Amino acid sequence: MSYTLPEFFAHALALEKEAAERYLELADMMEAHRNDEVSAVFRDMHRFSLLHHEDIRQRAQGIELPELRPGEFRWRTPPETGGEEAFDYTLRAYDALRYARENESRAMQYYRSVADETQDPELKRMATEFANEESGHLQALELWLARTPRPAAKWQDDPGPAQPPA
Ligand code: ZN
Image (spheres, rainbow, N blue to C red):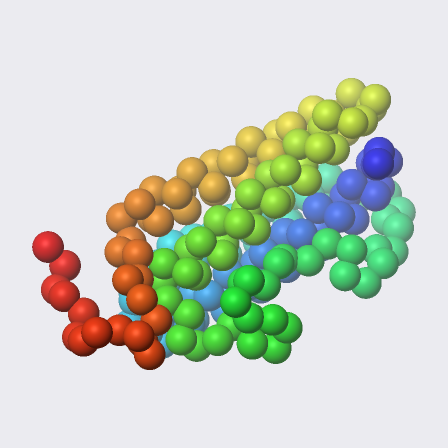
């Protein structure tokens, strides 16, 4: 499927807006868990998404944007939950980061596929630029994931208190 520039702008705006909202929720959730480090990561991501959204809005100025069908571009909810429970307050830092990584990865793939499929050089240039930006976010999340302890087990089959980090 190939996009026109207005369609691309409409999608990108929806994507960044939703990312900003989800990151704010994730940041608040991690703060409630007293995980200030990971909360700060999500606050940064929230800010990047807002900046990107504003940047796209300015580029799209004066262009009439099509309506998106509802749900045309959505963040995917964590696999173990659905809909309303997407932001289960028990979501752990590791899971929250993995969830964010999956969605950044989808955003990057979306921008890349637009860049690959379009015949419009301007759209190709912009989609490539956006894909590279998402790739940077993805790398930042990868780094955080690498330093975040992977939860060993769910609480119900947890053999006992967690071991202190080595
Ligand atoms: Zn991003």
